[in-house]
Length: 114
Length: 115
Image 1 (cartoon, each protein chain N blue to C red):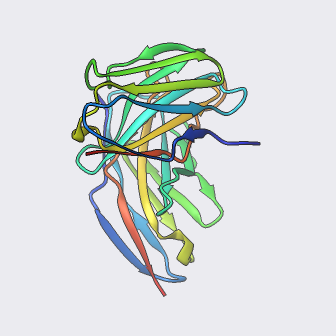
Image 2 (cartoon, helix red, strand yellow):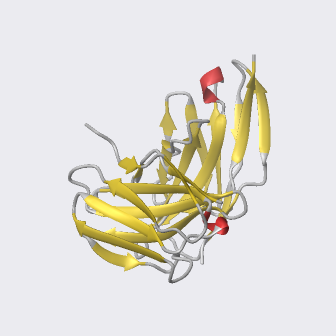
């Protein structure tokens, strides 16, 4: 069974450019989470979806960040325009909401904004 | 809001020995879940062990076990017979049993295994 898939694994972009991160959750999972990991702030939730509906986006830092989940098998996190302080590792995780509570993480996308 | 604290930024242990990583948390909720995640240099987040707050029995997964002290809000991870592959960052995490599904993470403990 394939795990959570994220693309790209690495992204280097210049300040001001648009960045789109992609995630494919585990088949059958109905909750999807976007986390960000930085040295200063550690791991923090940005947004999560249940059944493709955004439930809590209080962690989204500002309007430059947006996330969508058009269907059960795909989600995007977009940053526009990107800034150097957005450099971080972005994780996508999924879980089966009705059952237990484990969240399974993707390999992460390392974003560098120069 | 819930918080999770890992007071040991770094720990080291000799191969085959036992090491305990500390975690404390703060919450006003009575029902919740606690987790330990491992993050090796590959940066993949791997679930090591989980504990349901309503269970008094401490969780065990092979060489990994926890000491869950609900009243003290403490949740430590014990790794027995440490192996070189155990070297990683370890994160303690909290999740409410109702309401918010998000994981709240501690700052992590970097574990080094000395051969």
